[in-house]
Image 1 (cartoon, one colour):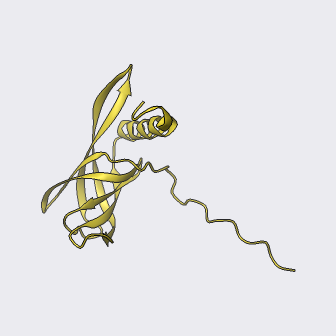
Image 2: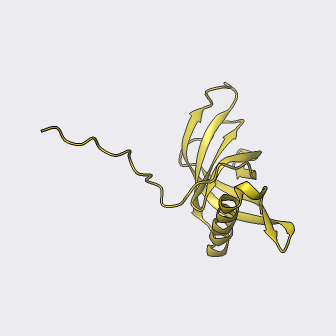
Length: 131
């Protein structure tokens, strides 16, 4: 008797990812790179950069999260350490690299701020940006 087909693979990430463009500054020994996230989670970010960063490169990360509180949007600055975990040449441009960064050293309060931001955007996508 045939076995039932296997269900789709489960998401392996522990933290949900948000497909959102958030301003991002990456600082490495090569200098600063200004870009924006393609997606973001409490444990890392995926972005497109104009130079190839080697896997395992240590980085300083600066994120600017637009947080809404009491009908006002304020910018919450998150600063942490990161490590490049994956680099791929961008499929649509030979001049850019899609880069995955793991947040290797981040303050618990900053992890909570990212989590709250992701939750607020996810829960309120239908009601306008950053509600």
